[in-house]
Image 1: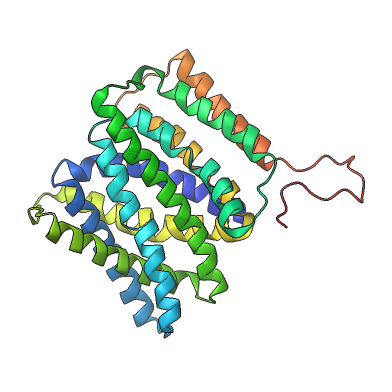
Image 2: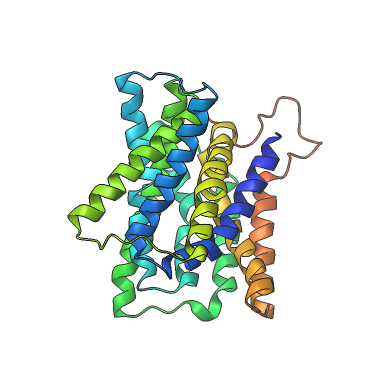
Length: 301
């Protein structure tokens, strides 16, 4: 599959997960809902690969990297983000999470010495401005929101560290599908342990809506989307891949137009255009007039 298709698939699926998450948490506590999501995802992924005999043995060191990936991408980041969502508007949360592209560039430079693509800064500026305009009437900051804001920033930063760990997983020669399956399993273990320590009420929701949403979040939302997202990270770099977090709110609002009657205002339309423009700035090909000796923009050194 072309890398552009992986990128588009990530944006599309993650845009749809907003609705699925809302349906899921209406029937159960947030922590237990996320736990069910990754238990289901890891069971499907590990079981499927085992049946296909595509589940190789890993060394202790390789499992160590997968534990870190599970803690950063499939557990703690979700706990922090969902904690934030309990006390802040979804629009403000979307703006904060769109900082992931900037955090990816910063963390890549600090922890791995990767020089970010120079276009990331104007692109993310356009993108975050666009997301802010999309949710202009939803950006409310009160006393309770300030604490939630800390959780949101921490969750986004933690997610960004997971993006870099996925690159380390690649250098450890771990196949992507099998690695993700084990990482989700370790993430589920961490979530289950947290629920036990936190005294979370263990319930098994009976509604078909909950399990339908959980199935979507587990298979397309976790197995497929994270496979595509990490493929983009490995191919284009974490900074470019992170721009997906800017675009999926646009998809989410488009879905909301169909399902919930969301009305696009002039401000929202302008925001969507800015987000798409930022994507164009980041991914447009260098001009044909560039001299042969000029290095292409965005290569790491």
